[in-house]
Length: 209
Image (cartoon, rainbow, N blue to C red; front, side, top):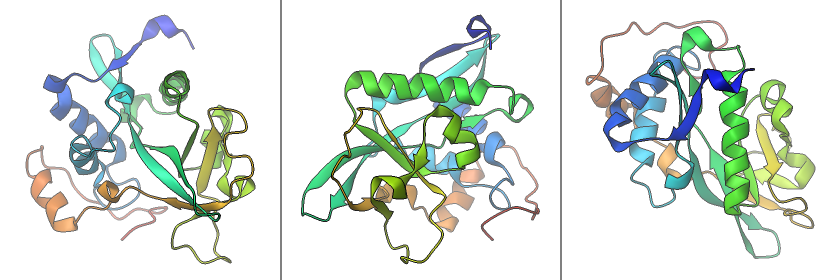
């Protein structure tokens, strides 16, 4: 991909609503009828765990086409220690430019910047088919378990990438999703009234009702 086609930079305060609409367009009817990700990013920006230095947007021809954010969180290690890590997302690309390499470009750029700042690892929920190309592997291979997930349950959605090689060596424990990601449906519905009307559709492959 020609990196001269786009610019990746920090999000500006005055474009936050534009970014929320981008996220809404990117996730609409993907995982559920409608989506909640645009409200999630709205809430997370005011969360103490939000990493402002890693709040990126991608711009092409003067238009925002992608974004990614990170949150600080922890692994509660089995030996009683608390291990600082990052989680990531929502990460989104405008629908008409998906599957053209832009998502991997902003992902790789933002991971590189997170490593430069000194963060040790990123854990989050995603598809290994896509994120594996950027160095993610199953978190279970690192000895990290997903909170509240039964031992015999499928955890292939739970991924990890060390930003500092060996950062998780000798660590086993439970990952905690930041509370800010959990939002109420009623709050999402109210927030969504600030955006142009869109039809909610129940489609094959959606994982939430």
